[in-house]
Amino acid sequence: MKSVIKSLLFLLLISSQVAAQYSEPQPAQTVPAFEFARFDKTAFTNKNLTSDKPLFFFFFDCTCDHCQHAMTYLNANFKDYKKAAIYLISLDSVQTINNFLHKYAPDVIGQKNVTVLLDTKSEFITKFKPRKYPSLFLYDANKKLLDYEDNPASMFRFSMLLKNTAAK
Image 1 (cartoon, rainbow, N blue to C red):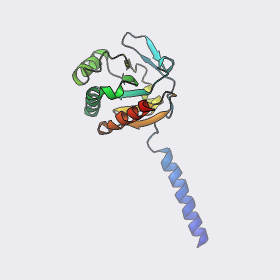
Image 2 (image 1 turned 90 degrees about the vertical axis):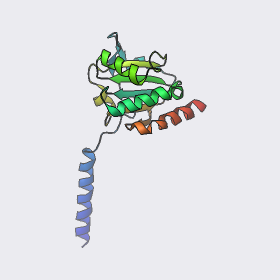
Image 3 (image 1 turned 180 degrees about the horizontal axis):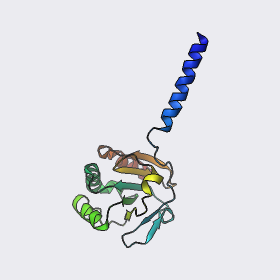
Image 4 (image 1 turned 135 degrees about the horizontal axis):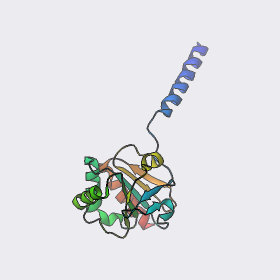
């Protein structure tokens, strides 16, 4: 009987390890090296990141309904994000992104702590490992992940984290 139990436990252990290999990817725990592009086509890399404040990465698709809701939240609650460096990243074209931002985040456009970037090399997904759109990452000033979310209804968590970070 003991050998049967040991065999079952061994099979359970093996199957859980196999399942873990095929589970959802874990978001990047630190900011990875990357190269995106500004609208003027100049490169923007991880070396260009602000170094003295939290980093908020918002990866979106302009046709995504959830992204529209998340961007609307950011627009309505932008005061909560003033102390963070915000990076809005998309695979879409400049014109499509501009139309999207003017519709869903007009108050975010032109803010000094906001940088809009193009993922022209399709690196975000492979390097940051998001699960779906929108992908929202908040890193501390040391580039360590504080929170990841892909549900626009949970954006309030970033507001709270940023308020708590700013209070320290």
